[in-house]
Length: 331
Image (cartoon, rainbow, N blue to C red):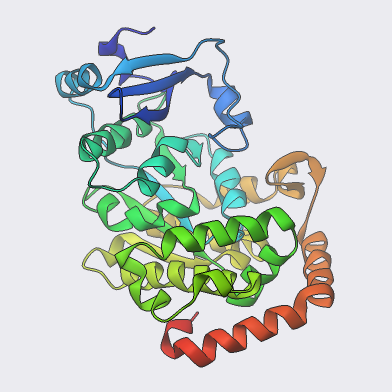
């Protein structure tokens, strides 16, 4: 593998996961194109090497200290899921001076791993440094995270150079997006079970019988939990580095949305650059699969079909949520 002194100079080797039992980091070899062509940097990562590389965490930490690697300047896209965050990441990929990572799996693993596990903090710090690498010195890293990473928002903001866009969606749209597919229904129940064990979400899950929730009720609970994190970040002492925006704005009014996000995140982009991005041919392709045509009209048709099929189920759950949780339901 790469010499460790070079590991922090380039994103050529991507950190996949942490083996806490063996105190090792797993890496895959990547290219700029493989990063771009990977829908997400999880099991769908399109790496270029055949081998998986395991490196001792102590060796990585030593290399990190000797190279003076930093985490600064990264822009994170936190999100409630199914809110056009992948579309926003794809827009950033069209900017020449941005290097984009879509849902890096190591950060997700750390978000889901109890922080009491030995060496968690060291793994977290080295993860941030590895994810901050770019191919060119003038590139700025943009990291679209998995929804589970929202809980790391305050920790990310401890670095004064990190900025965050928190992409959200109205509760009804989120619930309908969950109800449309069986695998999403199963996923939201799993996520709610995970969330219910975190002290950060105690007020959301107080007096809620997780096992007996309907799929739509589980979706409401998940939305409330992520919405609560968004509210806390946007009212924290670091709120000036957090920009909350409805994902619908990114889909329906991309020029205006990108202008606001760029300004809030400190991106130096011209109107000409913004115009070029929003008029790019790939804009009318599905963000998770550029081989599929997709535009605002297609999205509206999908939403109308969801309303017809699942609207009543969503209504019942949302009414239940509002009756039980009141102020927590502010969107």
